[in-house]
Image (cartoon, rainbow, N blue to C red; front, side, top):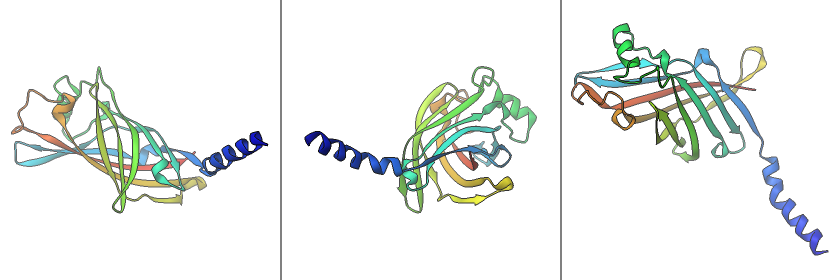
Length: 191
């Protein structure tokens, strides 16, 4: 009888976990990008974006705070609108794409924050891993897209210090600002 009570008690604890359904979502590469902006010579912002995003988000639609993110960004595709500047960004002066062709973000926690979410995770860029917090607006979706597949849309922002990741350390802040604003536009498709 005690064994039955113990098994029943365990099943009662596990049942809510079994009801929580997660689904896998991957980036729609044609509609997703990571943009950046940084102050140049204390005068104006230089803007650009990185190459395609790959990876996946495991979404728990009943409670988004139980979701997880694992994304890879192609740094070799950095584009600031100037081929001369892009070549410098790809060189060992900054991203050193020959050695570090990608950046990754892996979430470690998600909490409600105002109208959206704060997604804490580890960003690995230029071979250095640091914790960052993404401020994520409430997602849009899911909506049915082409071919009947469901899509979610996310907008996330964060600010990193380029020196924390060993980027452009020979350039003073009056030439290239230390703070880099990142904006992630993500359209993910249910698998």
